[in-house]
Length: 446
Image (cartoon, rainbow, N blue to C red):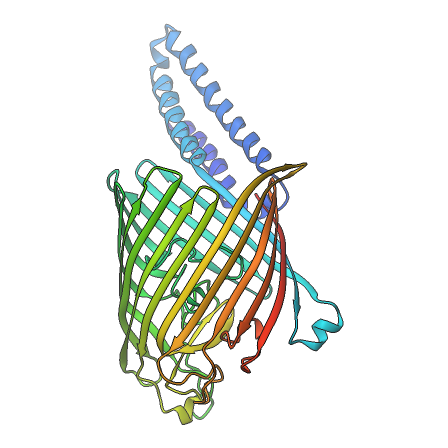
């Protein structure tokens, strides 16, 4: 019995080590190497089964215990092997090149090239149990984009717990290009929150309900989706460090209902309605305000053409410290993502429209060309100043025009991004003038 236990433990440790150390290894070996490991494990299980058959045909009664032990060991490791085969490890390595018309040094050098990102993801299932994990590395910071455990309660119902995508607006991204839209940059599309979510599918209907205990895992800005920044630094005398509002979204409820016309065909139109709201706690004052947001969206897929339309209304009613302490007007809400803080109007409406065309080609190794345009617009209720000084600027606008070229696992995005007062993202001035950034991203998926 001791010998069987050591054999099982050894094989199980070898299998689980394949998962535990897959992250760094994948940077040096491809999926064929992973397949060779799985084939080796499968061969080991087959050898155990052959040994079992030989022992079963042996006449000695004293071997009966070894036969049972070998059978149990083979069954345990076959189950473990099947679980690994149902897991999918994937990732992305990407470089970025940019040219910004507002940056004189950048212009003098004809642009810059930098590390873009490295993504490592794991998704899988074991029976009715599901799991997903996405971790990202950027230049100087890293974070967990999403990480959840799920259960397939029925054919139509799934429950997920952890850092999951918020059911709001057009899913999954809310835009069709590379850069994104103003609703995405404000946290109203493709946002991840910490809590529990229930998804139900019934024919053409899709319904999701969620409760989020907190907006993110922590109060900083090193995360994927934009959320209010709860970080509340003070100096040695206990005074507020200017430039920080200290709000965090807590105890949020979210719901989304969608109906798809033409379900199961190549020409579909999804209409969706969603809402979210809850507590807005201020770490400086210790008081709670509230926030709410609602959206109406359309997601169309018509052969090779795709379109997204979304209208979003929202309000942040925060219990901020006096603006003389924070240096930030109550007319704005401080949010953050990707290690960057910025200010959006505290109340208003946002509109976005996207159009894309996908064309399969046979140009050597190039197999697809994808063209897109994302336009978005913010209409604040009252004054809005991206600097937070209580002033007012023209309504923010953002447009991303570009294409994507795909060749097997390799890809390249080419975007021309024009903006006017668009939240100061990527350092663009908010001076009432139009500014342009040309972005190229090259990478591969594995």
